Structures are given as C-alpha cells and as structure tokens.
Image (cartoon, rainbow over all chains, first blue to last red; front, side, top):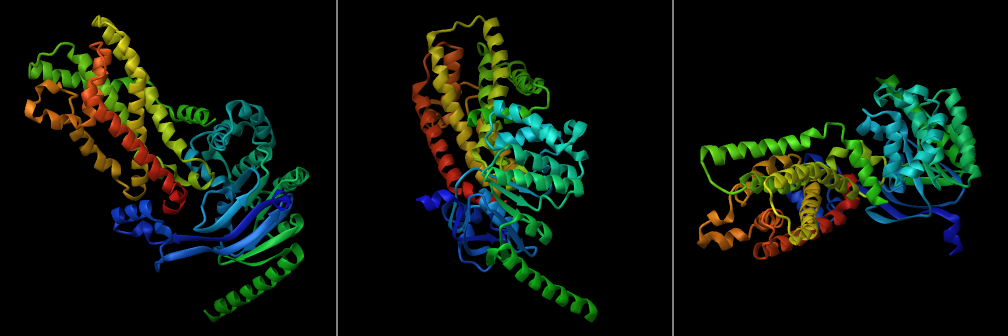
Length: 267
Length: 242
C-alpha cells in the first residue's frame, strides 16, 4: 500500500492497437455494429497497427522522466494514454493524482481558433472541470505569466507558434496538476521562453509534481530529467538513469545518421 | 460541477442572435396556418396554439438529434487534447435546445394569454412531461452521436425520416381525424402521446392523455437506456475511431 502512495504512474502490460483501415472501410454499418457489440479495434485482423506493444513501467512521485525516441515510436501515443485520451486495448494504467497533458503547439485550440486567448483559457479550464469561481481566481495570473499582453484578447488565429506554446505552458503552471506531461512543448520557443520554461520546471519540482518530459532535444532531457525512457516502435527499449539511457540512445542515433548518409550518397 | 460546465459551454457556443430561435418556429407556424386554415379552410379552435405546441416539442427533439450526430465528430482535434466525459458534449446540446425552447415558450405564453386560455392545476404535470421530453432528446442524441462516428452523413439520412415522422404524428392535425380502425396503430407513435399530452396540459387544462402517453413514456425510457448503454460502452474508444 505504501508503494501505491509513492507511485504516481503505474503502467501494466499496456498495449494499444489501431485499425488503420477503418476510415477507408466501405462496410460502415457493419463496422458500427462491431463497434457497439464487440471491441472492433482489437479483433485480430491483418490491418491492426500496434502503436504500443505491451509496455510496463512505474514512475515515482516527484520524479522527472524524459521520453526519447524516433518519430513514430509512440511518444505522443504514450502521452495520450497517460492523459486518459486513449484507453489501452490491453493492460492497465493507474494514475495517482491529477494529470495535465500539454501537446505541442496546443493543437487542440484548432477547434476554438476563432476565439481569443482568454476565451480559450476559459474553455480549457472548463473542460478540465474547473468551476467559474476557480477560473476567475487564476486567469489573471495565467495571462500575466504568458506575457502575451494585449494579444490575450485577440483571436488565436493571430498567434505565432511560440505564443500558443506560451499560453499552453502558463496554463500548466497555474492549474497545479500532480502529474504534468509535456509533449515537445518547449521546442517552439526562443531562448527567453526556454529559460522561463526551465524556471517553471523548477517550480514543478518544488511542488513535488511528477513530470513526463517528451523531447527530441537531448540537451534538455539531460538537463532536467532523473531517468529516461527510450521508446522504439511502441516498446520500451530502455528505462534507466538519464546518463545511461541517453548515451545508448545517442549511439543509436549516430548509427541512424550513418545509414541515412550512406543512402544519400548511394542516390 | 458537471452541470455548471455545461452551462458555461452552452453560453460559449451562442454567438448569434437569440432572435433566430423564435424566428424559425414562428415562420413554420405561419406557413402551416396559411396552408391549413386559409388554403384548405380547415376549422379548428385555437389552431395556432394547437400547432405551435407541437412545433416547440418537435423543434427540441429534432435539434438535439441532428446536432447530436456531429457532437463527437465535430470536436476536431480537441478530443485529443483533453480527456473529459464526452457526455458533456451532449448535455451541452440539450442545454442549448432547452435555452431555445424557453424563448419559444414565452411566445406560447403570450398566445395563451391572448386566447384567454384557462390554466388548471394540471399544468403541474409539465414538470414530468419536460423530463420525458428531455429523455427522448438526450437518449436519441447519445445514440446518434455514436452512429455519427461511422455514418458521416447521418444528418442527411435523418432529415427525410424526421420529416416523415412529423407528418405521421398528430402535429398538424388532431388524432380525431384518423379513422377509428387505424387509431390503435396510430397511438403506437410515441409522438402521439407527446403532442396530445402537451396540448392537454397547456391548452385544454386536462390531465395527460394517458392512453397514448404511456407509450411515449415507455419509448423515452427505452431510448434513453439504449442510448446511455451504447454511449458508455463505446466512449473509451471514441478517440480511436475518429
């Protein structure tokens, strides 16, 4: 039982499968029936793509875990699984605490891109279950922290990628989650933003929040994380201390560079 | 907490004038009155109120059902950003539909006042009536939102079907016009009990038309139950089929 309290995230034998042919399927009504009466997505069929292949790991509360891997290895999928956006085809995910997941460029705002930054903060909080009184208390802090100035009341259509990132990030600070998942949110920011982000991460650490930090930047991961998960094609290739995992990953990256160079030269 | 969130979202959605909510049903009303009372010269006491009461109920149901089809698919990428109870999307639609209905009911009240209709204690039945109406709306909405995931032009399919259902219900005409030998079959239409009861309560000051309303009640519970079960059973997989 004491184990559960110190554990923020527990992933047990989790797999996630997608049916790639579903959107192109012609037998829509049949699919609908299968969807309702059985788990269509998990029937053994040839066009099932297994995005996450039977992974298990645990994360202690207060730790900062980096996640690295090539594009398509399942990092964002894992983030979504932890955030509750996907439900595993198999296995269990146990989360101890409130999760806030931030995805790069705050793409979710596409739905509300006509609205202003202020309105989007409001909506985001509402969907996360905050009451109006609670939102009123924190919204001014979020706005001043984002340093968006007058742009906060302008339509989000006018925002640059960095501005969207700042907005998303400021929300994370004030929503006080127990577990924060950052999916490449820091990449779209200039030096000033990155420094500020670093400060934010320190704030989270002081609060003993658990952080999952997904990034392509090895320097950032090295700087902030205690341990690192290396995801490769949906499986955990390595989950160890930052130094060990990153050096193994770096070796792998060099090999990949070498292969690409060879292919370029051959062509 | 859930309720407050819904109201907030509902208010966010409304960027157009409230005026439209009254305009469309009123326009329908005028057209039907013209056709039936002027062109066909049908005589019926208080026909405008008779008709408008059906329009209000039907407007609520068809709005929730049609909007429900695209409730989940219309979310776009937002559904991948935050994990939230998807039921909120449908409660949102019901809230907006109820909000529209309030304006329509205001007009109805004015009409009732002008016609000097007497209000009896039976009007208290309105509360359970609205509850049943809500069950029909929400149940269908939940069901169609799941269907809409796979059948992308579900609204196009629904439109002619709903039109047909409207004409097969005692909305434009009273059930008395149906020949006796078909009446039992006719009563099986849950909208029959719905319209009859609503009119009984607000226009004639009578109790609900139990004979037909019982069927409406059974239908509403069945639809709601089915919608809830299917919705909740498949909710966790929404993000994987969009």
